[in-house]
Structure formats: C-alpha cells, structure tokens
Image (cartoon, rainbow, N blue to C red; front, top):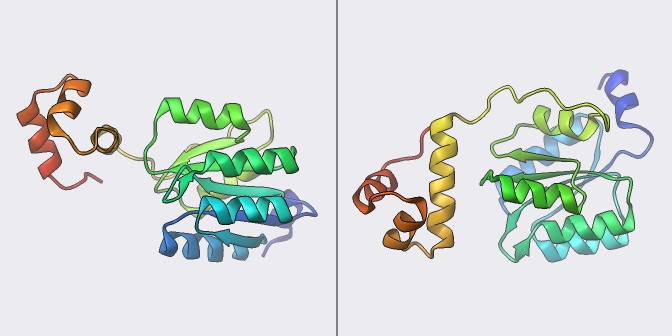
Length: 184
C-alpha cells in the first residue's frame, strides 16, 4: 500500500460497507482493505444500523435498496452518531430523486452500480469542495434507460400496463424492452 493513499485516508481508516449482494460485498470489502481501510460489513439495514450505533465509522458505503428496508436509514444513524463521516450511497437504480434524498440526509456522494473500488475510493476521499473524477466505465445511456424502466416496472408491482402508462409508452413497446436482456 502506498503511503500517499494512507495519508489521504487519515488516522481513522474505519469503513462500513452495507449491501445485501453478498458476492459484491465481499469483493468490495477485499478491495477496500487492500487500499488501507479497516472494513466492517453488514448485509442488512438492521445490521448496518447496529454497527453505526455501536462503532460509528469514519467512512461508509451504503446500498440504497436493501432487502429489509432503505439504506438511507443507516446513513441517518451514522450521520447522527458521527457527523463528520464521509458516506457514499450506492444503488443499481440511478434516479435523481433518490440522489437528492441521499445528499439531503447527509451522503457525501452518490454512485450508480456497477461502481468499482476506484470509483468508491475517489468518492470517499474527495474534498468537500471538489468533485471526484468521473467513473472510468460509466453506464451507457441505453443501460441507464433500461435501469429506469426496470425500476418503474418494479414500483408498479410488475404490472406492464401501469408501467407503460406511467412511462408514457405503448404497452407492446414496453413488453419488447422487458423481454430483452439488459444492455451493457
């Protein structure tokens, strides 16, 4: 580990990772440990809140949508216990409304999945007045559109007609999009 990265992280290298995608959580934890962080992981909102309450960390990466609730609940607890902590919210569904909510509650930054360890590191270590560099492999416009359609489809309880109405799209067009694989 180079000393420059360690100096950027600072004295307190504690990092809380909260995500219910177990393989992703393990990979990100290993990658962040290699970068000098002392990592604790949680697979649910309840576990994340428990760690944030008992041992508030200097840094956190929290998934927005977890099986047992909303990751913003973990952000609120951590912000309450340790106001100076740097928190990045991750989600597979990039939406402006949730980004605004995350930042209002106290997240430092907001990244869409798939975000790699370098993107997360840059977001965590960016100064208050500087923006992190853009991601190396951002989602394509087709992928962002597909993610948005999937999100609305899920919010409409997988009802094609209601989803098509809300997206102002013909039902058959939506069915064709839903039948295809996700773009890269």
